[in-house]
Image (cartoon, rainbow, N blue to C red; front, side, top):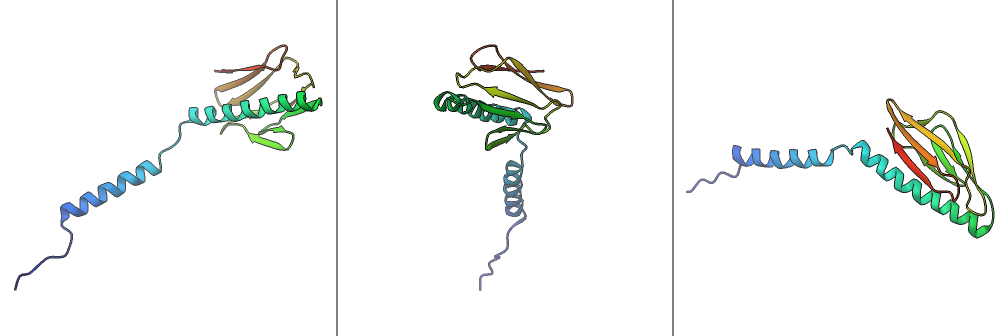
Length: 130
């Protein structure tokens, strides 16, 4: 009678363990902070454009509140990127023409600074990172 061993060999067990470990490492990788800020910038840009277009289409002034931890676009609220905060909350009015008074919102996170600079005129802005 032939004896067959139905157990895993040491080599097979190590291969399975290696595959499982690599799958877990891939699943738990951290997203870099720069990717978080890039996603936030895209979200902010979208919400800002929506608020400007709403002001122009409805011929109503829109108010955007830059609070300590969040930005409120009417009913829509977005949080700042992880770790960033606004030391001086402000409200910005988008007039029915789309005009925004020039101002700067400064977000800080430790030694990093993120400035939203609203230009004179049509409600455009730029972002400076330091």
